[in-house]
Image (tube, rainbow, N blue to C red; front, side, top):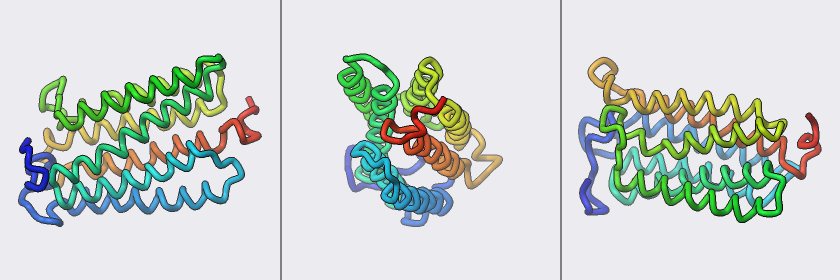
Amino acid sequence: MTSDWSAPISGAYCERTAPGFWGEPLNAGSSLLVIVVSLLALVHVLRSRSLSPALIALMALALAIGIGSFLWHTFATRWAELADVLPIWAFVALYGAAVLKDSVKASYALPLAVAFGAMVFVAGLALSMRETHMLGDTVSGSTQYLPALFVVFAAGRVAWKERHPSFRLIAVSSALFALSFAFRSLDMPLCSTVPFGTHFLWHVTNCLAFGVLLAALIHFSPGNGRAADK
């Protein structure tokens, strides 16, 4: 990848066959869907009685993910890529830390959650920006999102072990994220069969997965009465 932050980047997705702002209409359009859903969720959270700084931060990051994704799939430059991956890994790290803190009943829960979140953020950002594809290029560079997949599954395991009522929602989000991971991975391999690619389906299913994850936090946060229901 070029080190020039303003130079166009090509070949990252099946849909982009030429430079230009609308070189990826489906990918860019599905990014707008993420923005719309994030705004609707943010309005819902602002009206909720179980507000918390972490929850507001997650909603803001969800909105930033949609904006960053749109910039990346339109401008397709190094700086736009950074705008795309930074909020993604901040969201994943903060969500993983929040679930860990709320689920682990121990005095060291907070420092453990902070350390875990920092580790996930650094690892994810390093993989995204350095293009470290541990399984080669056969999965469209999706190996960079393995830490996110790990966080979702780890959150589900913690919720299951602690018999947390959010387990079912986290399990649903895990299945959705696994499906979205498959869509992202198949984008380039299926390019000859599906000319417009499958990356936009990664956006759609990811949007659903994030929505379910946020619903789990909203409805089963410590400040919500439902958190005590089993």
